[in-house]
Image (cartoon, rainbow, N blue to C red; front, side, top):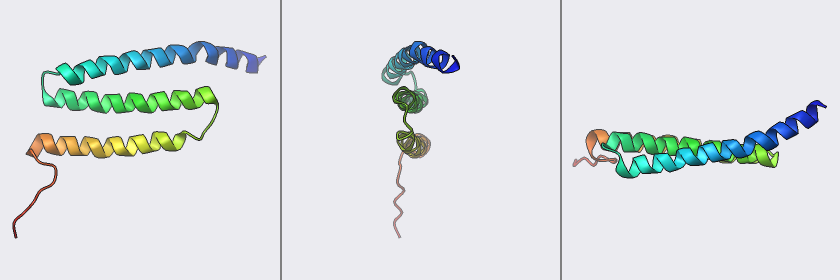
Length: 101
């Protein structure tokens, strides 16, 4: 009884979650393109990455596997490195400092 309820609930909720996250990504892409300032664009890019992690997690639930957990972690690590690079670029104007010695 409980297993049937859980599977029927997943069949109902998962497509709704996919649609909501996809709409969120479309809105964020608009913010990246139109964004009034560069920090707004950086936050939107970061949010797109988080939504991509959510999509992979939802797909893992949909497939009933835990094989995609590594992909979620990889996206998170790359997202963190990218956020640090964008923040450094916005603050200093360069990502890699080259000093003349």
